[in-house]
Length: 255
Length: 255
Ligand SMILES: [Mn+2]
Ligand SMILES: [Mn+2]
Image (cartoon, rainbow over all chains, first blue to last red; front, side, top):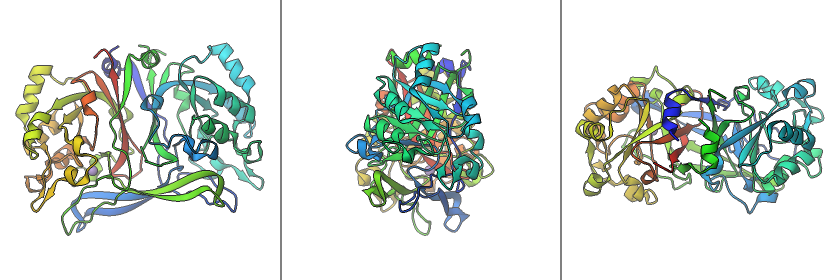
């Protein structure tokens, strides 16, 4: 297995699945009275000046849950005794991606809910998931990612964005081989999931089962249905409930 | 090339090379009058309470150059028109690692300087570097990583830590295939490099040549001399001169 040759020969390409981090990176907006996370903010420390003649550097403030990020079990009350984001075993951060494409359905209905039937049909068509894998939900939502209003899609009655139904979240939570769920939207739950039972089942059930969430991905159209490797690289924040993450994919060019 | 099988069969292991991020993570201490970066700081936003009944989340403040981090060309005045940390091509973030082990020399002399002769001797012994690769300088310094005083090793006359000489930095900067230099110390330059000509040649020459620095790695003893793939995953901070990074390695178990 010559990994280095695979990379240098071009047999494997590296694809960036991460949203760029700026002060405009969309963040989740929770209803009152809950406290919201903060946008990304970059502040200059030195810039080829009296503070540092030869260098430019900055500090930044961000939410753990800002932009493309990974949710650890400890984020949710159901997983509070589980791993923080620094404790996730490295082999779970680099693992096969299985891509479920529901972008046609989402184009017709922004409130589209993934159901267990979609996942069962996917396993019938593409084969059962028998090895530790990330479930990547391709919704096409990243087409809205540079327009925060369209991306968050908030209305009087809350956000309208796709995600798993309670039963699909349960299917993923109970699946013996799925490591976590990766999505294009601002969070792993559907926009209306606050009214589900339990509320936010993508968080409640997956994190409660020791699984992970990965959000705000883009470029998923570059991934094959199977055969790519997902690299989810959160910062190892000790005690962190999540972290902004760089997410890359290794895609075999013959795939 | 079945990457996914290589991972799931155990033919490739994932090794974490990253220092954990806490308020105690050592940071570079610059002499007066220059302005220093800031330590990592985590602040609670909600914790299963009235701010968020079912969830726990935090915000954090950090320097771009805090902990394990990647320096982009734009960080230094010689590279100021070059890439910011969000502009680095993904294929440079996942590339072969070539490991130069000078830990025996550093054990005898914390001010050890890597010289071009060491790199030429390495290429004679292990073969020329003919494909895009990260130069990983193994100094054993990570043994001090959990003790900030021993790790920074500051004295009246500045820090005493190993790094490249000016000529070694020039060798790396001019090498046609080296992507960047990765180290165990707090920065890519030797502790005494402020007095070199040019000052901080590991920054001045490498970043000026469009190359990268990667710092504060650990677990380098798990890497073979050749055959591993380095994954350097900084956050894509638009306008960023650097970013804290998760750094992983893919190591063939047969290597
Ligand atoms: Mn989150
Ligand atoms: Mn730096």
